[in-house]
Image (cartoon, rainbow, N blue to C red; front, side, top):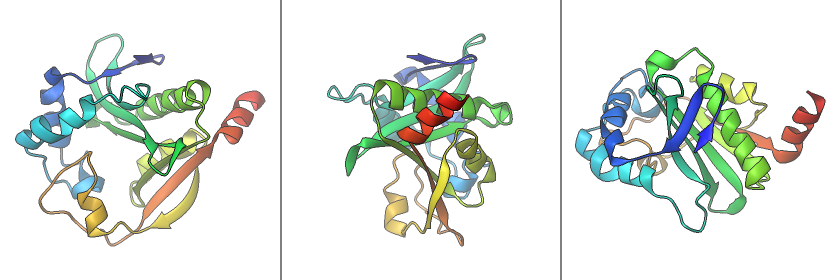
Length: 195
């Protein structure tokens, strides 16, 4: 379990299915992921939640965390930190928050906690995150935690169908690009020495 000033990040359990269903059925939450299409409950129960519950015994510090408010216990959304297959000293961040919690700095708070966890405890060298170029709010989170834009790219239809954090039979191809932000451990350490 990880904690921040306001959040508790814990591992997912089967009882989280209703939370994920509500989250993935808000068209605004899913707008930049699959064009706002709802995720069927069966897919959440049989594919997404089991994936979120997997903890690799060889690397248990990585995975998906359900985020809840420390004081009230309300489900906020989720965060993830997963090693990249091509370099185990690099990891990808992910996050999705319920709309009722947008605009409160909670995404930034959770991402900062995972970055600190990755660099200070897991000895990662680099953390990356991606989003659609029109998702300005998500890019702002990345910028606030010190990440910088490293590339623009286009996901293929095959790439989109392989994403395991959402599901739809009708994958939408965006007109624009996706963007990748990154933060190197050296830059993160410098930020913390200077502050």
